Image 1 (tube, helix red, strand yellow):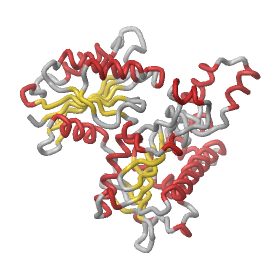
Image 2: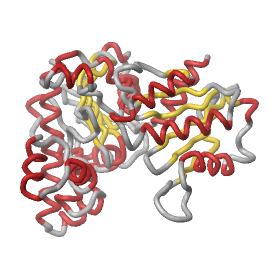
Image 3: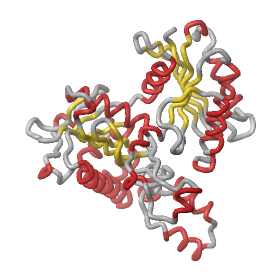
Image 4: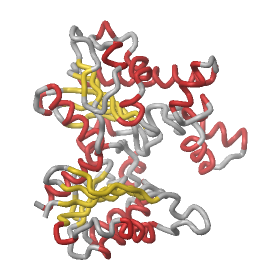
Length: 377
């Protein structure tokens, strides 16, 4: 039994991959989109699971299916690693819905549908927050009243943990060292973006907070801002907290600054002299540099800065802008190496640089499959 079905549910989508872990090949890859969004669309994630099963007909052999691995967005402070799903675990994920009101309900609906579809196959939850459970108290604690922290769960949780875990391990391999021997800063730059300080294979700080809104500038999320802004906007416009939250998550970031949440559109507009797009790119890279500097201070020394995800893997201008001016810290990029296109993990720093700068393609599905298979044996 060497196949794993990985299910990655968003609030209105399901991505799936069927993996043969004997040779780590992908037997099937697909997605179901616009779940519950319009009349005639797939009404919910349970119906979405039926679409996945239809698309897998003829390719899925239940006799060799070792596990179904689920990406679950929020595990709170309860889940520190991959977890075999049972009724108790589902109840715990349900209790955590207030921390992820869009994603955990979708995760649960899909889990229920998958358990019904594969009643004899182990189901494993891999939590986006689990890798960051090693954050020390000074890093995950907000300076807010004890009742907020202890009764309402207000703290830094961090996200993109599955990606950061996979990429930090692959980066250590590229360096020819064990994860326990290296410190690095991992930059997951996609439509959502986060930085992570990794000390000896463990997350010790990360830019996303209690929710994915904090930290770097993202496609449609603002990233860091003065929290009093929300009260100011409410006083001046009459917007509710929910309306402001919607704007900060879905109508801010690169979309608000440069007119698009697609970095390719921003780059094209900036090259044409558009001032908003130019500002968006400059602010995006500036925020990344700030976090590199902050996490260098947290770690004391670093062996590598690692770029990953859609923008991090494919945009040489963003990579160059993110480390510009850091040469005196031993962090630099070779223009020739940086410009070379490749899908492989690689160095983009010059030979003389004290700190390696790497591009490591992420693979969250393989990481979920690895963790699920390791758990079920």
